[in-house]
Image 1 (cartoon, rainbow, N blue to C red):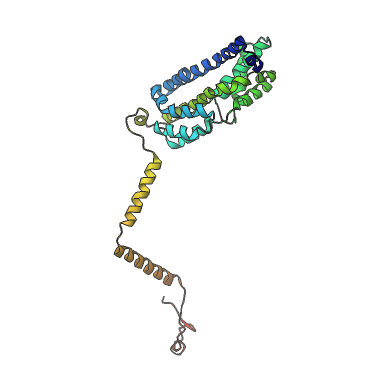
Image 2 (cartoon, rainbow, N blue to C red):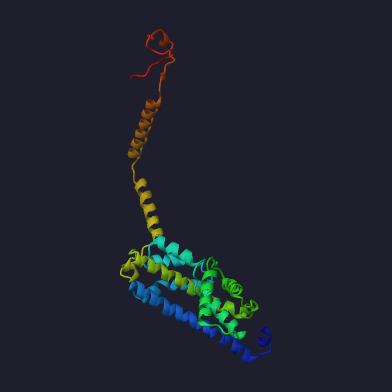
Amino acid sequence: MPSDYKQHDVPAVLDTIVNLFPHNIAIVLQLFLVQPLVLAAVTKLNPIHFFRAFFPAGVVAFTSESSIGTIPVTVRQLRSAGVPGDIASFVAGLGANLGMPGCAGVWPMLLAVFAVHAQGLNYSPAQYLFLVVLTLLVSIGTVGVPGTATITATSLFAAAGLPIPFIAISQPISQIVDMGRTALNVAGAANTAVIVAQTEHQLDTDLYYGRKEYSDDLNDDEQFGQTSTQSLTGTGPSQRTNITNDAKFDSANVSQQQSGFTLNFAPNAVLSASSDDVCCGTKPNK
């Protein structure tokens, strides 16, 4: 393929570009058709508001090509859409290592179909379904970092008995399509988080539909800290002195109550001691 580019072989370049179309079409259908339909069918929510909240996370995923690196942005956008923080953190982290419809679903299956047709194999629908199940199994534990789709495809080819060298043919274009795959992965995890929150009746629909403004907890913590500092600073000197004296008095009382005996080392203590007294000390009052 590099030699074709060097020799300015236009048909070879066009063939390479054409190979990207099935992958991009599959990503678009999954992202803008399948996932919104699932969201609307399960939660009865408008998917347009989901894409409005998801857009910043999708941009970060598309440019960074890392599902794990996008987790903080994904969690914040999910919380701004009304998803509770615990659900957003758990589902976003789990979705970065499990499922991954782009890197562990679309791309390995397209490569497997390419290898099957290149060898002239006659696969039945049951065998293609078996490839889908294998793809789901090998995707478990896949790390959401750039290039992980190649590792998943290698595991799939080894499990299905397909020739692994076919994967090397797709490497020149794998990095190009990895941006769309990562965006699809993050969208799938975010979509699942909204579904879980809605089915558990914990989704704030006012935030989801934009009827109220999202307030970040970090800003609330900063305001709380400033308020506490101002309240302590506003205490007058006399009040602070009284508080200090009261604390010392309470500490002295506690120390006296906790001591078992009060020793008396005065010279006349022994002379004035009675039979009920303890030597060099006085017995505590009962």
